[in-house]
Length: 151
Image: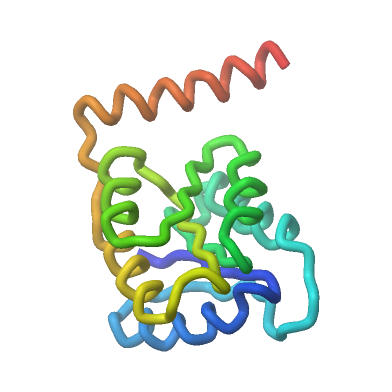
């Protein structure tokens, strides 16, 4: 699976530390920035990544800002995105199994590099469980469709 990864200036250091580990694990990904610690607006990165996932170009992605909160809020505004902010391995596992999250948000100023590596690896290797969880995820998708229609 090839995925997309990006960050704002607050997530830059964590993204830079995370990418070599992901490459060593054999993952292919597209890094869409930012590429320095110069200030950028997190919605620009998060929404651009979310749109590329929602379009089907990528199955999943990782987005990082200082806390992970801003990017998760912004990304979740895009129809079809289920972005989950994770700060521990269990949350990463369950958000894939139960919520079929397609975008992982991390807080670059909140969690350490080793924790982020473990979260990312767990999130990337965990599959959606389906079953009763699929019914629930489908309700979210249905609501998005209804909102778009009824606007």
